[in-house]
Length: 178
Image (cartoon, rainbow, N blue to C red):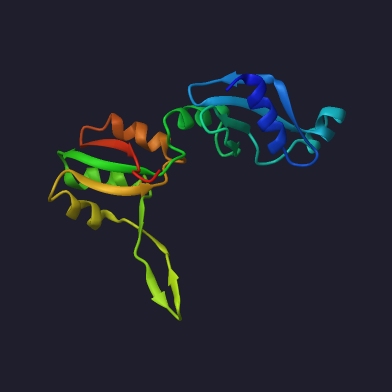
């Protein structure tokens, strides 16, 4: 995909009243980033006209999918997270544990969850439940332990802390059905 093709996709994705700024193009391993601004802000320069909850868009170079980036983190965070594939469902595999309690606390910061489908009133409910310290400590009895289909896009800082943690070693794999 070329930058021009990515720009066309980003512009097609832009909401009414928003403009994709082609001068802000940044190319990454994942794709192409463009800042998005409101027409009103570009016209007036007034901060009150700046869009809220937007850090721009990232166009996937392989699929052409356009990802709107939120304002929870700065641009570099989003670029790094997407380059690392954290926007996709990810399996977390615990390979080694040296201190079970501290390892469990480190994993809790990832806010991982699981779903047990429940049928009630003719409907199947899929309410996520978070793993807790006891769940993690129990999982350490048979390593490697796998926590499937985790959403880690907002947990890059915690993953980086685990990477330097001597209490456990983990591996990340894209979930099989992606």
